[in-house]
Length: 226
Image 1 (spheres, rainbow, N blue to C red):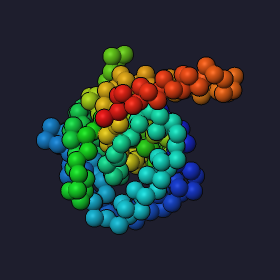
Image 2 (image 1 turned 90 degrees about the vertical axis):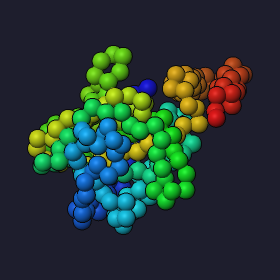
Image 3 (image 1 turned 45 degrees about the vertical axis):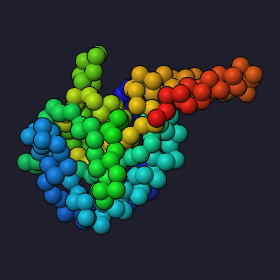
């Protein structure tokens, strides 16, 4: 499932993050890439030990935790602490690649299986040219370039890329999520069912039929959750 969610970050959160990034000391983005991805990765990111990264991570994770659509779509079990990257100048693109299946927590305490990948945009599309996230799926290449504060989630198993930034800079956070429901098709069915239940409640209230369907949703989640 490829899904874009607007307004994940509040305006004041965006302002804080943008202010912090004015102080950023960028390093080579290949430090967090697997062997195949590193060969086509040409961007910059905040170093793991940069104090700015810890501050931005707190803001991003708090925003994700309060967003019901993000929870419904990803059904997160674990979220690898988000990274922050920059595309500009000579370090301006990321060729087609697939995200590594397993990721280690920065402190080495655990591994995270990458079921869902996500990009959270920190600046608006008119601030830079290029920099589209291109995700290949059965319907062809999907090109995504969202407003600041919006997030796109997509299967970590998909082949994807970032096109060259030819003007300005593209600032974003990227992250990997281990879902409670490993199977992408099952996650999609649960999301569709959850959204239908939301609409039914708005239209009809908490009827016996809605209660019964809600029970089916949760019983499926119990059955499919790892």
